[in-house]
Every structure is written in structure tokens, then in C-alpha cells.
Length: 404
Image 1: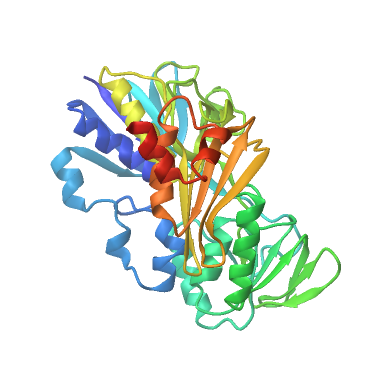
Image 2: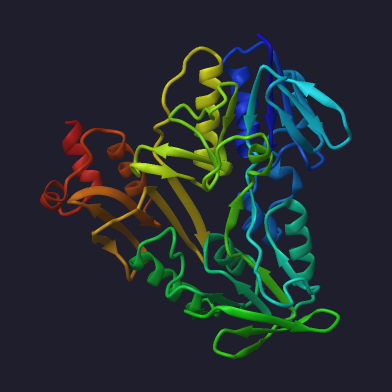
């Protein structure tokens, strides 16, 4: 059945290799990563692993025995180039490997902060296990911690740092790219109540220091003391390998509804892939475990004779300061929202609509709403505003009535 080569040993790459074996693929499966050891999961890096409540073993997606038993070859190397004409990849050490199909699961890298002083000692980011180890070690000595960026990673770090920190966000609200204004406001309150300082609408113009960082200068000239600065201003997809191979790039590696690139032998999945998202109705790149896992399974199905367009429902989660936020659907272009539940008690959901059709549900400490939303979004048509209004915007009641 030939060789399937998976480049990238993160969540999506691991899942592609594992799913091929689960579906009975008996050809050669090679999983290439540029970090030593077995593949590991990243979400705990900014949560339990950072806080010290989860160890290294708990990060591993599977132990070494799994890969040996499944016949998945782990290669610790960096791919230098793809020779599409010869169906080969070349490694940094000048070794090469032929493939019948290639799966690009190259992920993303942290976006740099383009200001003077960003390279000072004490300025760190969080993406890999090594990053988390450095941050955890630095926290033990730091007095003044500043987090630049109010997205998931920055806020999760703040929640699990074990001390008050200052969060600086250039936009006028936290979680600006991923959450509704109602959720943004709630989490800003939550972090302030936890003792963190949250500064909104403030960019960073420079970092100052000597042998290490000492101050963060904001766009209005304010200087904050800082001996540890965590940069969490988003990520950019890792596309250099694909671009050098002549594949289409537009905010990621461009793929079709089956996650194939313009080269029928090459797929792209996970954080690096820009795909036609059914729920968004547009080309989209998603950074989530759900998307990584489901796209990997979709490609494994295609390579074992069960090809179908990718249409999985996007969903996300984050744990911050005692609150669990779960999101189902895509918030893009929402024009109406309804809050259901008890916001004061910290148990509520925000229902977002576009053209009076439900498109996303954000649930804070309401897991039953999240489960109901995911079930409702897998059915056609999606719930209309009037139908949900009739049930008092009770998702569980609406679901029960719908399936009765």
C-alpha cells in the first residue's frame, strides 16, 4: 500500500499516523518531528504542566510501546525540502525518503513582537515543552510578570502562573478574535478579581533592560516594571516547506474540501491548513485540538478508501481562573446575541446568531449547554432565533423537543 509520510509530530500528525493504523492501513507509516521523544499534547503546557500539577508522562499522547506495536516509525529530524517530481523529501542531514502520499502537519510558530528589546533575556514565549520548562523555571525568581497578548495562551498563562501578573492587550477587549464581547467582558472581570491587572487598548512600543528585561514601555509612554515578559500575540502557520515546493499559500497551506493541496499526493492538516470551512462559509484556518484530530481522521479515511469532504463542527475550550469556557461553532459575522443562564453565578451561555440562525454557543461552566449545542449543530437546519425564543433559549429543552 506504499508509504505515507507525515511531517509534523504534533496533535494532527500523531492522529494521522494513529488513524491510518486504526483503519487497517498496512503500508509504511513514517512520522517526522523536530523535537526528540514521543509526540506530546500542547494544551496542558499553559495549564496543568505550567502549574506543576501535571508531569512529563501526562503530556505524552502515547508511550514508546504504542509506536512500536503499531509499526509507526518515529523520525527525529527536520525536513529541508520536498521534491514533488520525485515524491521525496530531503532532510537537513542530506538523507532522503520517498513517499506515496505526504501529509503536512507542520503546525504554527509564535508570532514575534516587532519592537526594540524583544530579544532581551527574560522575554519568553510558550509553544513547546522546552518553552514551558523555561517559563516555569523563570517564574520562581520573577517579581514583576507582564503578559503581552490577551488571547487564550496569554490568559491561561496568567491563570496558572501562581501570582498576580499584568496583561497588556492592544485590542479594546480580551479574546477579541475568538469570543463575543459578552464573554470578553466576563473574563476581564474574572482576571481582575483574581488579582491580575488587565490593560486594554494598549500596545507595546519597546522593551527595556540591561542584562535582562526590566521594563515594558506601552504605546502611551507608560513604563511597567518587568523582569519576566511573556509574548502571546498569536501564531503564524508554518508554510515555508510547502511554499518552497510550489504549493498554494494563503494564511496557511491551501487545501480543498478533502484537505488535498493542488498536488493530489499531498495533504495539509491542522494549524497550517487553510480549508473551506462549512460552518464559516469561507476559507478558514483553525487552531484547535478538535480541528487537528478531525482533519487527521479525515485524511486517514481518504487514504484508506473512504474519502469524504471535511465538515466537522469546530469547537474549542479554555480553563481560566476557575472558569471553563467551551465554544461550539464559528462566531464570524454574528449580528445578534442572547445570554442564557446566571452570569452572576458564573454559569451561563452566550448564543450568537447571524440572520436569525444560531451559529455559535459559548458556555461558561455549563457543559450540558455545550453538549446540546454540538448536537444541534450536527442537525439541519440549525436552530432559528424564533424557535429558541419559544423554549426560553433553553438549549437542552429545545434539543429534547427536536428529537422527540
